[in-house]
Length: 366
Picture 1 (cartoon, rainbow, N blue to C red):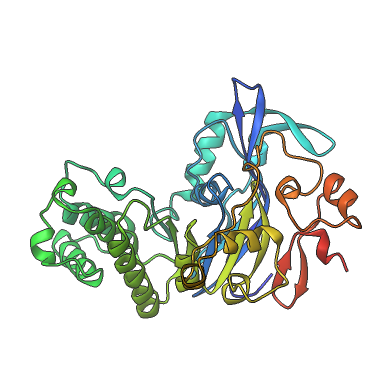
Picture 2: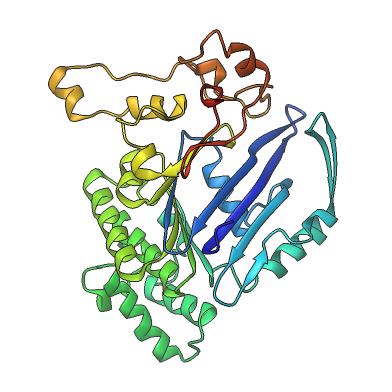
């Protein structure tokens, strides 16, 4: 692993049990990811591909049974080097058949106590998260300034309330909320969606975390406000060099903000590498799923030449019944007769096809 990696995820598996279907939903199934210090990693993919569950697994916020069941999440900060899943396997008994988990027995109380021990000095302090819906993430009965002040008192070395309040003013100014000293006393319902999101960004950054996770930070905002939030995140990255995991289904947002990108589908990683390469429509050597995502985005050329957008055929993978072979096989339009058998019955490994560029596809077997 890279010596400057701040987050190293290895073979992460987060499953949920569907009582109605008497089967496991393999939300995250064997994900390997790494983020270097000062880098922004963009996670992209359709809804249901496992992006948000990966982030929640890192934060230790998977409450439903059975939750994270195996893997390693290595986190390195200035004073911390730990596996965020350390010893959790002691609270789980897995039974599998042919490498597929068929039964999980879990000591839920012991598991949860261990998670809280591991995350006590990390969640909110070393790792902060911006959630999808800012209004639901803020307490509606407390002014936003007081919420940021409490976060500073809880997660930093500042313990004087007056000093914490001044620091909260500072962060409201940094996220460019208009009249920050006035907005300090505003309740969430008095603010627009864009202002609530800025307040969430201020709260997340107030602890000066080593890693920031931004989960769909522009979802639910109109186009103009989305653009302003993206510009804000770009400026804050430049000013504070925050290491970030950015999750979005909006490829344009990922392209603007990310140094590297990872494409997820069906709970696993299909492609990763430089964001400039992977999300460029001109690079031919990419996973068919990535190419299909890019082809479905409207561009100036589509408008000028009146070209129809290309839809990805078929339905998103049912992660209860994952296939033996490639997870994208049923929807792929680039399968050749020479590799059809492998695509259908053998899942390809994630392999490097050029320096720093990895793809999970039999097209690049050589």
